[in-house]
Image (cartoon, rainbow, N blue to C red; front, top):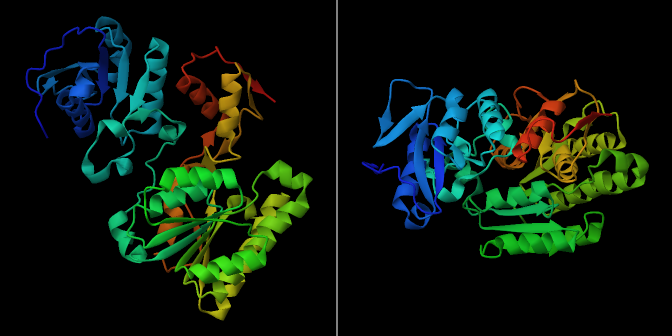
Length: 405
């Protein structure tokens, strides 16, 4: 760690005055990045730190200006124009409190990501980002544990269906961080696959296929041609209301499509087949849930024949995925409201897209079972989620109405 001795808190022309909240290792790394990078130093100057540890008064020449409860005073006194929350292991209640105080002050904020997003123990300026709803989940996201699973994926060929979707894309993103031989991305929508090509084209291990899982001849030809070691089956219809209206499409995609992929994988000698399922498949009350439960039964029944190992991962609500409540709330906020919540007491368990992908990838290395579910901590009230999204969009309480429908 470079030291930051004697950095004066000046009032440079057109510089943003940054308040770093959290004077631990991550906070010091953030300060170090600002000081040592000329391009950043030309735009920002550090006002100081806030930290609830009252036993320290300064770190490397930068002052501790107060505790977290002093945010409003410090922002006004030191003319703070931006804040960086540098508490990667902070609990939901603490981060919510900081976000609320900064929102009241009208101060733009960024955050150091969760501890498992900080590669090799270093915080770089590029990792500092806007605060997201997943930062308020109330638990640390699931660790990727690259060193533990690298051997499982070393020199392996991996095939991903539904690769253009939010989960499929993130699975590919994480697979390319591992020592895989190559990753094949199969998707039905040409636009989504084109976007994936733009994202991953620089990695020579990335391949893509346009195809429909409902077409058995096509899916069988592609899988037998690739002969992957591992197949992640993420392709599915998942919008509950739409599948209620068109149950035939739920059956064709979620049931027949899964059967096609599973049989093609078994015929091609795929070692591991992982189905992306949903908690709605447990005692299903919807067509979508029932179709996914049938898909689960199909792949689990194939284990008795040996050869390919079939397993499944059940997700809860995935923040920001297609069909989740997050994009809906975002559109409603952008339109000026109201944000529509079904009932004030509704609670749901949430996970983020990255940890959903990590859970899928990790399960291949586990041998104790065929059904995997993430322990998602405490449930979150949907109305609290709506309030937090309003705050994170830069609005104060009451500026965007919430309607209980």
